[in-house]
Image (cartoon, rainbow, N blue to C red; front, top):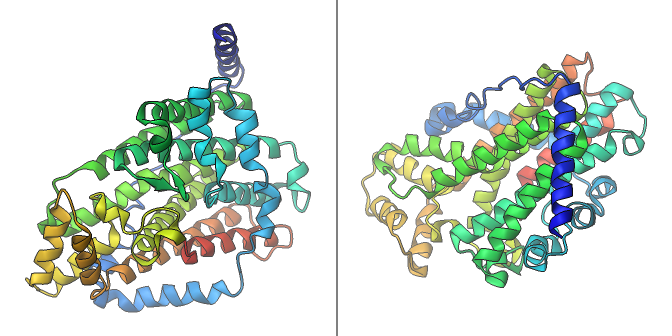
Length: 421
């Protein structure tokens, strides 16, 4: 076994050296990820002044839903068998102590939003280059499938670590990995998956993907650190809202935005297209997390596949509560409800009564609606960056060769916004 591992490592190193020597490797140009993070916050912090602008965007988004309905069957051709591909081709190992925890969350498919976005964007870019040729039969399809798999593996490994830190008992309707295999073996399984992801990148013959992968890893760690901070200054609620969006980007948006950039690298797109795709991914990633945070307060444990109201129980204060506090402060209130809500947020151990009280106070405010509006604002930017990609290629969204993949991708944006779990 050790000999096989040494040979595998030697092969990986040799491939990497070969890529670096023949590809005229250059570091990727930096994309400013912070310029989009506070998008929409000024409108919502001073909602009643800007309400007409927010309402206009929400109305526009809802008008487009009927035109681009999400149809899962259109995407099954790409994601069908993806977990089987991951388990057999990428994370298979003879070491049971590593294999079992690594495979645990792959027993049950999640939402698969990340690979869906990858495949849909890749298909759109393919159509801009080659028209109506079948993407699935193209030379780049296998590489895009592997890249989508690598991103899903990294996502799953981050969930294992998250569940350990949050002491979460369930995930996807299953007992969490550390509950089944213990913390040590769960960590081994998660780290093994991350390593196999890096190893698989070497097969894609695009060395810049290593840089993209490393950026995602760095951002995931930064996001977890921001979330873990205990001392929060609720007197400066606007700063907390900005930190919340930064955390949401690092923990969720970065994986999607950088994944979209990877799709462009495999498709051999230039920096302008990479930047537009990155920004598209950044905004849809933040919107996805905002909706996730809403669902934690509006759906049951059975619907979510994990414990409802778990964020606040675990000390994670998200958009709905932060906007509720900000709204009460903006109204000049110094009420018992405001003081009670802040007190509950600061408690180290929260009882079920505390959580129910916080939810009751939340429902008397527009905290959930403000979070939803912010998700709509980010989704609107997604559409704008998709159209930027088309303009860069002198195409419109109604052009026959890209009309269908464009509509599929916009339907996916609406699915992110209006999903129920």
